[in-house]
Image (cartoon, rainbow, N blue to C red; front, top):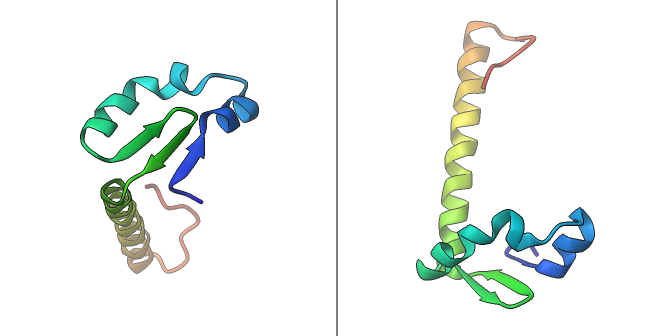
Length: 82
C-alpha cells in the first residue's frame, strides 16, 4: 500500500537506516498530523494522504500542460524540457 511502510523494509532494501536519511522530517510531519510513527511502521494519515495527492495532482497538471503546450508548437517534438 502506498500510504505506509516499515523502517525494516527500508533498511533491507537500501542497507541504510531510514532515520539517518529521512528522520529529520518525521517529527514535523507527525506534528502537523500528516503521518503516524508507530516505531517500525510509518503510516500516512487521511490528512497526509489528502495533501500528498494534492501535490501529486499539481505536478501532474504542470507536466501535462508543458507537454501539451510544446505539442501545440511542434506536433511531434523530439524533446520536451520540463
